Amino acid sequence: MKYFRAMEKRTGKVVYSEVIQKVKTIKSEQVRVDSPELFEFVIQKDELKKLSEILKAYFGEPFQTQDQTLQQSVDRLTSLYGGIWGNQTLYYADRDLVCEFAMLWPWSDNCRITVKLIRHVK
Image 1: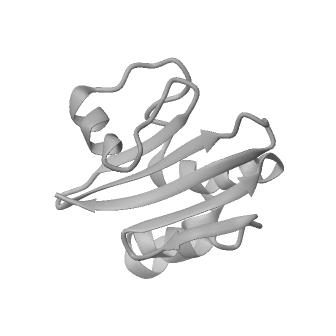
Image 2 (image 1 turned 30 degrees about the vertical axis):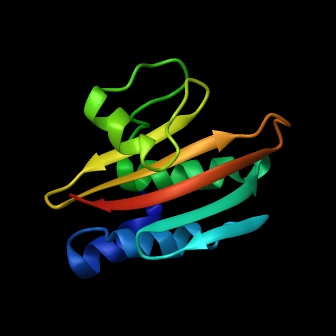
């Protein structure tokens, strides 16, 4: 929560674009997509703790962790962006006009993680 206190004092709420800016401070191996609707990048596993703190501060606890089943509507939505499997993690928030979520896909080498932060307009 410490990440967003200044934002909350200034605006009364945390804004998605500010979360993206905070996430961009994490050391990434590769940025694949950087647009207002999708930020996709690859991190080393040792950066996961920092990323998780930021995501939890914004989204709360993960919506799905390993081996949980998704609601059908969320499953359809995530499938538009590559889907989410049992060994992956999903943070999710359904806002008034948008759905915002983060998908974390660990690589088979157990050293890297692909991260997608998405803002999907309903």
